[in-house]
Image (tube, rainbow, N blue to C red; front, side, top):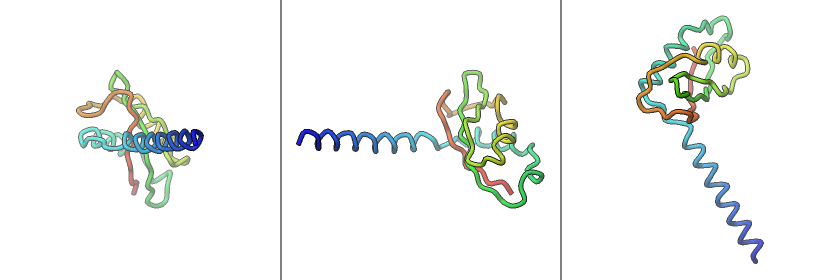
Length: 108
């Protein structure tokens, strides 16, 4: 009985932790969103892709207001995205430092 209770306890907390982490990765404020999209507009994606592509960019802002790209879900565009965004300063209004955010992007 003790083993079942402990197993249930661990399961509940692992699921709760998963949902809490998923909630922390979204919700980018519009001013920051606009700045990131402007930085991405400088990349010539037409040379890298042929059709519309959807991807998620995971990033955080360091103490110097610089973007640091953690990862993308597109291996082909990963390096181009990192070159375009890494260590570029942005003005932040609502983002927290050193918190990972995910920005969904559609490249046409």
